[in-house]
Length: 47
Image: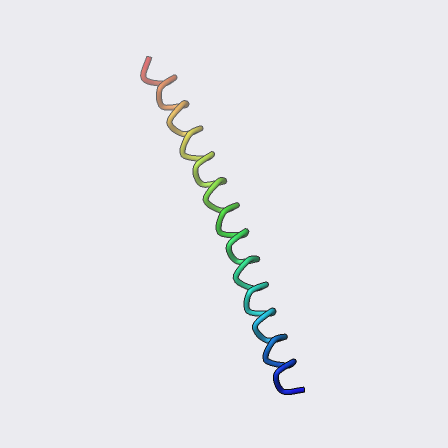
């Protein structure tokens, strides 16, 4: 039972890392999208 519990804890750790990674990636994509839109608007104002 002890080794099974360790496997389960490892699984939870991996699951947490994957979920945090997905959240991190989504955050980066949103940030990049905002930066790109901001740059486009500045180019329009610059003309």
